[in-house]
Length: 280
Figure 1 (cartoon, rainbow, N blue to C red):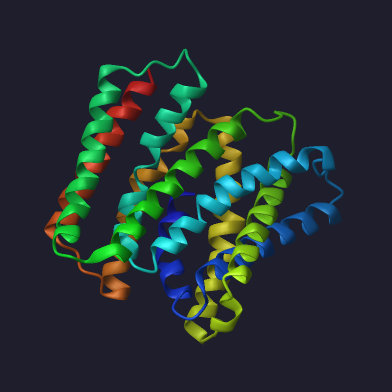
Figure 2 (cartoon, rainbow, N blue to C red; figure 1 turned 60 degrees about the horizontal axis):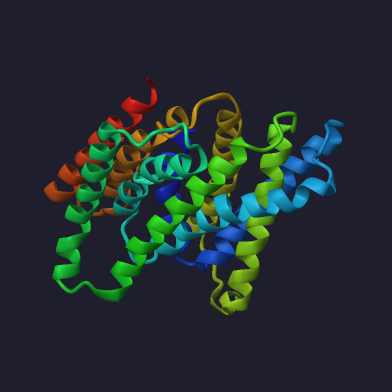
């Protein structure tokens, strides 16, 4: 999951060079979910009944619609590496959501320090860009990454409280399908079909996102959520930014500034403080 998702930031950036963002994300997830459901049907495995589909739709909108859709939207105006570092804040959001959902999960001093350190690093990362007047588009991209984190955190928390006897892969496939359809509808309402274009590079990235990011990565994430603590699952936030920054620099020529490296390291320190406390 960590390795696959670390590469998807590059894949998204390349795919949206010619394919509009919401349509790209929507069809990516809808196709992946449909493929998994078809394979499960052929194998005769149980699919969650229609009575569960409303919950699957809610999860799909939270995890796919917001959790991934907002990341894709952000990458229109932010470098892929910077986006990955900003999305690394998701463990902080997870801790906050879990605290609201579970009164027995206290907000300790160590967690508070971790949250302050992490969000302070994000401010360090983005404030100079805003001061330089890089503008509204940059700011909206940053906000979009945090909406992605919030949607992902709420969806992950809700997912852990769902039926334990559900087929994990089938449930994940329904979430992909419904979340992807929601994104596709949003893209169609924006008139993105008129902007649709293809080249070999963007099509290859799109296929890679379906196979590696959706079929592989999200299925692994859904499985991990059922069998591991949220704090452990959020470990991927350590790995994704490193892979994304390296690939963005080497392949897309994105700048690797000392500020990005320092702020990214501080974000990971904040995550370590928060996550280390959750293991007690």
